[in-house]
Length: 421
Image 1: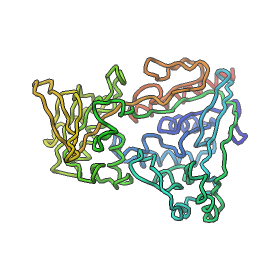
Image 2 (image 1 turned 135 degrees about the vertical axis):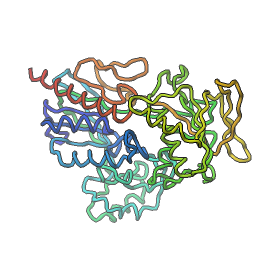
Image 3 (image 1 turned 90 degrees about the vertical axis):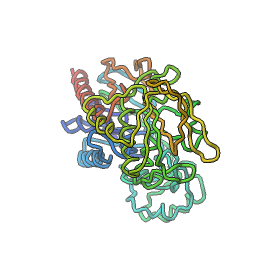
Image 4 (image 1 turned 180 degrees about the vertical axis):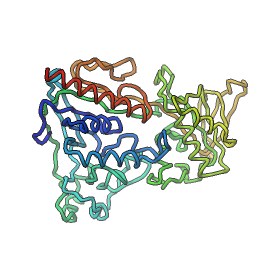
């Protein structure tokens, strides 16, 4: 595709998370050529960063590995990682897309043996774990990343140590001088599956994220709970490593708030309920409090909510806390507010507070003619051959995003039929 096989009958899928994987596979498995782009060095998107996900509460490795195997076995799918769309011109059935592929400084010859990482002395913040820990400057992006070629940090690639590592690689895959390259490809239709990003919790000033070490976010908590995360799955406080046995979850942190995100992200209530079970399973004597405005367990997940509500170790307080302070002596966050059911004010201290931040679409600066957005920056489908799917179009849970992307794949195929006509 980008290697010369792209034709005007190729479907472009932008985004390699669960939505993009689904759209690409559905189109390819019924016989269409697909070019799948992902800006990160790996496929899997946000799902890859979860500890467990609905509906089965299994680890991401389950669903992702099945999809990765399907990609490996399907010659109709070409994958470009570290790739971003710079410009889309043309019209339905006859698009031209300019793509920039950024360097990973390790070529496809990489076998994933790990010798380079063992020899590397430099450590950097780990972006996969939201910078909660350190990793080698040359590494696999995460434990089961696909593609399994290693990646080198761009700043490190300029160093003398990076040049010395060239001789460590037995297959000659390390290329510190690698540069970005640009290609232009013809495609007939485009599935826009760029996913979502967590709302920036530092913007919610009263809650102290970024100032108080023991105030974290729901996505960071997923990485803490993962056995492949920065603490090996141990739920501990970032400040001192103390076990987090008294934990609070604050719902709608920045959501349903016209100062931040005015909409509901659908998944936050269930995510906090799920994470409450992480705490209770790891520490049977733990005390968990969930502060909520309303509880929303969408679709078939109400049964899970009922199950969590029966846990005597989980307390529910209907309230949107006013602020979080910190006990300077202990590092404990103190949640302050008023219970709206009883009118009683509270100032409760915890080992750790988790902010349930919402979903923002990752669609800023989309370089496409005619791309339109709603008031919240989600893409609005216009029937013009560019089809938004998954969380680029609406806040969705994983199962709903898969359904959305299956539909988007069909629309892309229908768009191709129009182009032929």
